Image (tube, rainbow, N blue to C red; front, side):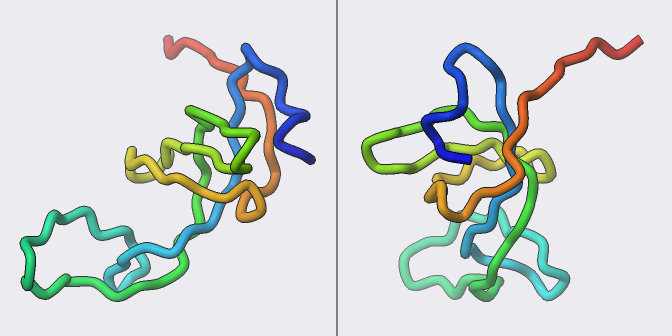
Length: 92
């Protein structure tokens, strides 16, 4: 599926991968570090499901809200797959 195929006005989600800092269990480390401070994680490939917040057709990038961590990632569309429309429901 191409990024252009996602209809504006609809909510979409997709699986994605991104290189970020991970702990030894493969979880994203969300820590701000100061200049010169050692980062507690190591770079690695993280895969998850993200809700598409913004898409840029010119640069082929999407901003995703990760459903596991609630962290936003800017990802090249080539690193996304299994895009589908979101069907929102209300919890009872």
